[in-house]
Length: 161
Image (tube, helix red, strand yellow):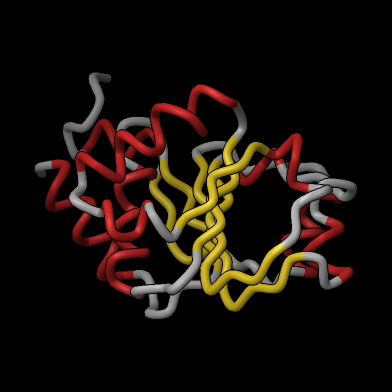
């Protein structure tokens, strides 16, 4: 199965508007799926939270260009988890890239009104097992929307066995 077809099936399985967790193994194209969800939902403001400055400054903006979403890049604040605790704003959509990096302390703005939001989509291939993180997802009402394991990746020909 082609990567495009797999990605389209994943997108078709996610409700509109999307709110929850997307657990996908490497090489499926989590960033593209996040951008396609943004394009589908047409939010006025987006907050994209990512683990590091290279992703923030180069990789994520380049992906917006690749997937023809420059209109939405202009409406997107891209920040690192390290600065999430001090961030403020109102957003229609929040993307938690590598959502396992959220912690009790850096997520506080979601609960104290510092960051107001309508929906959150979490993207990751590494779902944490720590109860504190699972409790955070519950507090944010983030349930698994779709998932694909590494075995399914191999089965679909996206990665070598």
